[in-house]
Image (cartoon, rainbow, N blue to C red; front, top):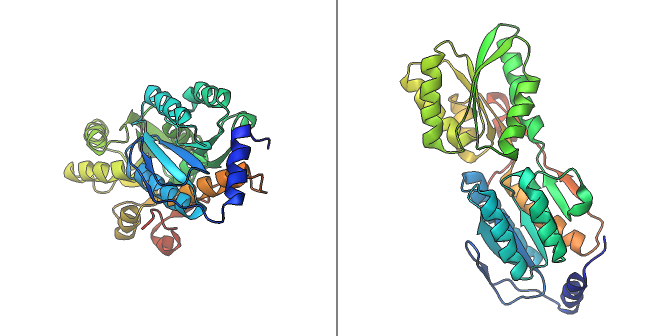
Length: 317
């Protein structure tokens, strides 16, 4: 990979300096620390538990890599994401790590950073043209959805079943998850409802209340993250639908506990800790022209009662 003149200067300084010191990491739009040799801008996409764990992993790993970190949050808004990227460009960071709000909005974001000579490393998703990015730590979101659908197929054992979907917010992550789930469902599983919960537990509970009222014969529900799944479980239980089985996504500590307790039937663990660590280590390695995979695939584990001990650590301590 060819480096910009600014990146080469940063790397030369890093070699010349025996130790890079990171004194701390700031909140939205702020970074602290005395090291100016290697700096990363992290633009987060939202405010869920996943996003907070991802940011913590990025900050902790950057510290071990000797990099200063500036952070910003786009709060599920593509316009805010572009503004955050423009702010990071003005800070002249060595590279940007972006948990995007929407892949469709990335084209303009990448072009803006590219024009400024600042490479972008993506988390969770990638682009169709990887030549335009530094790299990506990719979660195969379609496979995540497919794993949950596979569990339903096995559990239903050929019976005709009704399935409800509580999606996330409109955008790449939710659409890929739901698309993978629907595509992998058996012909005997009928999707009777599909509504966005906006990655918001209160909204998800409202959606679930309406869903179970309209479809009292519901057998399964796919929920786009565990925080919403807990609210959906609460709504179903209150409506007397405790037999509806819920499958979901993340593999958080609370999610694994819920699987163990049986309140959630299955979840697909995609560790925010692993994503953040991979993003920082690989971005720094690629900036230094090291032999690092440009596109790194994050391991996925379908977690059920039978294998809860195999779930990876989700969030940094």
